[in-house]
Every structure is written in C-alpha cells, then in structure tokens.
Image (tube, rainbow, N blue to C red):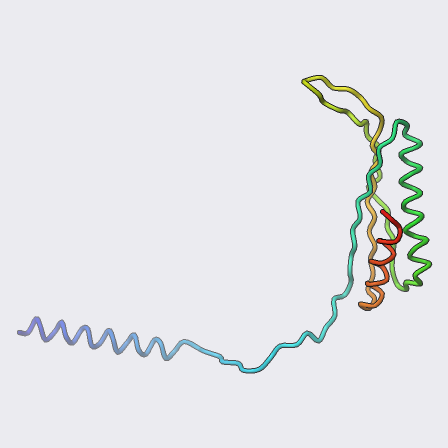
Length: 136
C-alpha cells in the first residue's frame, strides 16, 4: 500500500511540475496584419549573352552590337539611376563531339551584362521593357 501511495504521489508531483513548466514558457500572441514599409535597396538584372560564329571578330561584333542596342534602348526609355555593367567577356573554340570524335566549328563569344538600379518600380518596368525591345 505504501508503494502504491508513493507511486501516486510521484505521478502527481511530476504532473504538477510539468504544468508549472508549461506556464513558464513565454508566449506572445499578435493580432493584426503585416505591411512592407521599406522598398529593396537595389535591383540587379543579369543577362548572359552568347554568340557563335566562324570567326572571332564576327562573334565579338555581334555581342558588341547587342550590348549597344540594349544601352540605346535604356536611353530611349529615359530610365534614370541605373548602371549597365559588362563583364566576364570570353571567346572559346566551339568544339563539337560526335561519335567519339571532336571537331572545331568556329568560336563562341560570351559576355555577362548586369543592370543595377535603386529606382522605383516604374523604372524597373521601363528596364524590363527596354530589355525585351532590344531583342537580346
């Protein structure tokens, strides 16, 4: 009987201490809605250009023409506060592997363009439209 009483007492004490632990857990309840008050600092649009041609000069010329066309479209759209950054320019041999044999087939010119802006959403829309109208 003593053993049963001590077991019931142990269960009651552990249940009581568990209830006290639940009361000690901090809980914050919030009611309402959220709203974004701060716009992003900047938007970065990345464009990777690639052109294949039989001569290095031809591939480079086409890439330069595409980049210039994008710059002209941005000026034409009167976009303010942006940077057009061209980097990672490279020209590689266009090597084709077919049935275990490799064959050189001209050159591949690659270039990365980044348009960095901290402007409003209206200007971002103008930038997207300029990219689409430039055809790159």
